[in-house]
Length: 207
Length: 347
Image (cartoon, rainbow over all chains, first blue to last red):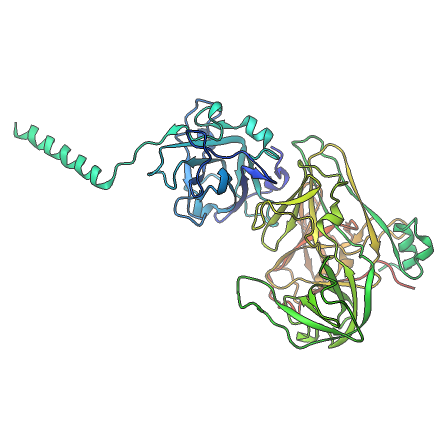
């Protein structure tokens, strides 16, 4: 990892430690746009979640499970996360606080981006997730603080990162939403299912 | 402070302009950035631009009692201003804002402080200042002014001829975090932050500002900076509760006399910032980590590291470098000047 290692190593962080991350798929006029399942660019406002894996549960190669992904939304200014801009472009700087944003005692985590073909997981048909072993960053409370860490997927700065990244949908799915989103039951549907289950159990007992 | 004459100081940094040092001490200084041992093991170097551009106007001025803390009534915009009227000036309006210029004003202690000119008329400058210049007698109402073109990211780090590549990083301290800059296609571009992906080539680098350079290329980089050597003490502001990355302000060291490789920590006058005490911290970048320094009873002490609890007054801070200062103590901006004396005397 080329990023700011000397400063990060100074950490000895406690609760309230922070971590800044610059992330983008576009830089200086060149973009690797996020795309939908038909290869069109994602719409402005489609959801991008920043999240993390515990180091032991991070996928190390294509085909590994991405079930350990934990999305962060608390400090990002939006209920669910961030969003895609025009033409499938995405860029953001986030300042995370470990006391507020992660539900783990681990200070070093592997970060990831999950992007959807809609503005919420519930409305999405497909999504994809990308992570990289270079995206292991550490919360720190040191002073002076370290410069921001980087998750770069753009063509200018991110060439090496793109080549070594792991995509939930496999290498061929890079930048595209190809993983089917599991439908989240509507509250009324879930209630009906519970009611049906209850009736079924009741009928069996009556027998 | 050593009794090096300005002529000597000039000679140390101005080998090719020896004919002019008696009147205008101009020349160049070289700033070296070490090569990375490998692309994954970058070096980090603290630098600053200590030489000033040519004087484009000099004369007497009156600082007007019209400090406006929020001219656009938008509390989110830190755009406080104050005006300065120059005696007998006949400038073309806003000629000093086409390219950014700084107004160097002499404060009540005789030190120079610089402020960005945001607009002007034929004889009145509007400068950006975060505090009332007349408060707490920081400046006298009548003082002297020099106007110089400001250094910018592009003028210091280079554009088309820059030694930096997209693998290197520049970090500028914003007051609360580091802003990343990258050289690409003959331009400097912000990476992250509110100006993400926008050009940073023309962004002003103030003379009191430190710069952190991360070199991932396996070749050393060298910057040759031209300009005028400061001939009087240089001041900036380190208010209470703030964190600043400050320049050492001068291109030569104070010690040892015969071969000035650094400025003694004690000669930087950090502990003379009004209100500075043992709860405040100075951080010196060793090349691989921050060394914490603490001032107790007018003596600097190493805090932590291999020299923990030993005297640090004689720590040599390289010329053209920077220190990170964090104040836990209180102090308004107008009462918190940080003044660095020249490590030579003008004769």
